[in-house]
Image (tube, helix red, strand yellow):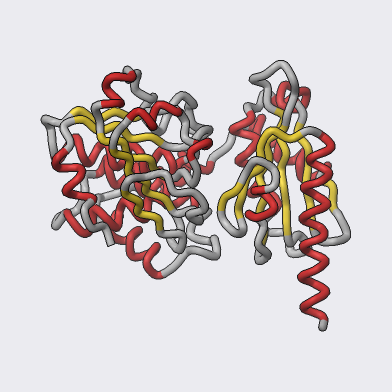
Length: 321
């Protein structure tokens, strides 16, 4: 399953681990879980965590390292939780002669000299933990296990997503051997501020609901400022839609504040139907029922909504035949 991965890690003197832009806990957990394990196991190696963006829970993971072009060019590069090159949070990964891709998204783009892609796994942290379970005979350190468990827990939404499997739960049990404090970790990962609570109430009260079974909301810069919410914090509220029986697809479009011309990034979710091919039409992609779109105008938001509604109506029409 992981042929050659340990050998590549062992022979490298310097390793740089990258992940995707606007990293979530699975990206950060797999990045820093792997980094910490390599540092603990091979103290003489130089290991760096690369990237520019700080994640949504910056207090739970280390800040990215400052790494020179020369170091990257002389290092083994490992990219985790990133389906395509454009999403890697630092294009300098390509300076390396050897690149390893470890991911759980559908493998639409190959970019590694070695690739370990398992799109049936619920999280990249599940893949990293499976690898470590193969090569480590005793429980992992609490620090490594904590990073990996946080990514596993968040990407499965507390083990409720449809790609959560017996393997996922077995890996969770493996990580649990490291004396994890489950209640404390859940509190840190899923608790929200009063501002976020008020923002969540706004979303629930103002979501647009289409007859096709789609619900969505557009979050402008003005709304972010009104509730004192960052785009990363706003993105996490996509979960507010998922337990509503009448919503088959739901979406959250958030105006980005880091440019002169306004644009929107969006998160798409689905209970059953495939939506990642729709996301690919709008500078995005992802899992079959969980994907992202990027750099949208107001008009393109309408187009995404129309595509999703059309897909829903086609599926429902076929089911009624």
